[in-house]
Amino acid sequence: MTIQSEGHTVKRFDGELNDLHYRIIEMGGLALSQLRDALQAIKTKDVALARKIGQRENELDLLEVETDAAIVELIARRCPLGGDLRTIMAVSKGVTDLERIGDEAARVANIALQIYGNDTSNPNERLLHDVHVMGQMAVDALEKALNAFDRSDEEMAREIIADHRAFEDEFEGSLRRLITYIMEDSRNIGFAVNTVLAIKALERVGAHAQNLAEYVIFQVKGKDVRHQGP
Amino acid sequence: MKARERMPEASFNREYSQTVGEITSPNSRIVCRNVNVYYGDKHAIQDVSLDIGRNEVIALIGPSGCGKSTFIRCLNRMNDTIPGCRVTGKILLDGQDIYDGSLDVVPLRAQVGMVFQKPNPFPKSIFENVAYGPRIHGLVSSKAELEEVVETSLRRAGLWDEIKDYLHQPGTSLSGGQQQRLCIARAIAVNPEVILMDEPCSALDPIATAKIEQLIDELRSHYTIAIVTHSMQQAARVSQRTAYFHLGRLIEVGETAQIFTNPRHQLTEDYITGRFG
Image (cartoon, rainbow over all chains, first blue to last red; front, side, top):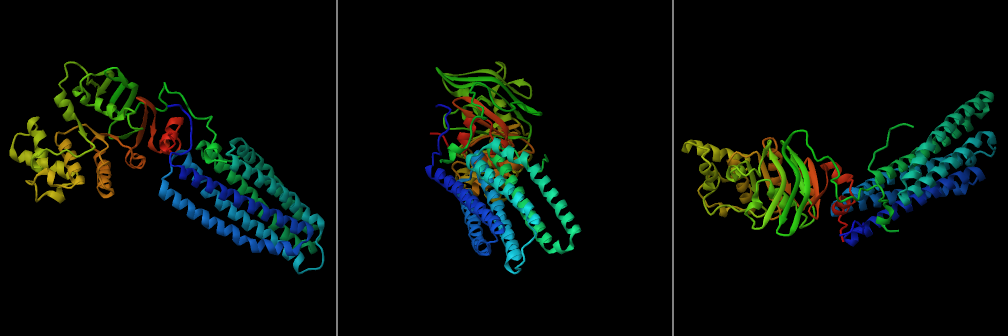
């Protein structure tokens, strides 16, 4: 017998694992588009788009529930071990992070509604600059994390974790700038609070992307790299 | 994209010739070094080295014909009974070479008891099944002592409460699971140090299997146990260490949790995940 990895002897198991993989990629795609749309709504003052995000949030919730059910069934039926077990655990944890990314996108969309929905006056663009910068960073991190998940790319996952420090630095810098704006002109307080909530939501997206990267490393290497600091 | 194609495999060890993992045990009761077994021209076990620790359950897993049963049968010289079988290398039990020409195999097989795939009670009463060993090995000097050994052995095998009122019924009248526990009681009765189990639950239903697994867990405090099993879940449930055999070689050995969650050899990964073609 040659040392050659093949599919499972039970071919249906391959199909079930592939199905699980497609589910998480589908969830990832949906979470990413929710996030992009939320940022677009803020950028283009598109209230209608912001409302759509809230309506679509249920789709991610439903996918999470369905994926969890599929995982429970797979564990009960196949008693997975080794790399299969790690893959399933990574997907199981990953779907939770993706659902939460969806929640954060909805939060950003709600902030867009608060900023543009009721008030006719436009916010100070300087205040929103940090939302645009952190938004792009969050989109990039999530996109990269989904690619790493799709390809089981350990190297890419390690890059995401290494890059996360810059994300945190940007978040802290944004907070300092917003405090300065508030101190300069107290009329900025309302918008500044909304902006803080938005960048906090985007910071959480970055943290969830980092979690996804950590699951990829666990899946590929069997090493738990969570909570190890930079 | 297929699931398997997504998993990078470069990090797996692919060497056949050297066992992956720690073959030694800090508290070894059995030490095997460079063990080879030949059935005539067939080289059934190739250069296997492995320690088995005190109060440890080690599970031996691998595909049919990989040599795991042959290997445990070396540990009490059961292979001596097979014509044309030749064993080389060293196997030490508490420092004593069990293949030393001057060693008497009868007390060895009492020291290293064995439980087989199919329960094989003697065609005698339940009491006599357990009493036979202590009697022929001269381990008891009175009827009262013999009765005590029988009761203790049946209690340790978790069978006493079920059969204490039927001790003089034939052993073969028991259910499959009870017969297997009777065989374990029979092995225990001669005061062994090691118990070898060759697929002890393969003929049992899940409830009887659970009782045997619970028993294995309890027996571990008194004995060293090596179990051959085809059930990955059973190996994961009952053992502290697991050894994976393939084509007569010991491919990988390690802590059971590590073997089943993060094996280091490609063959182990392929076997436990059901990928052998």
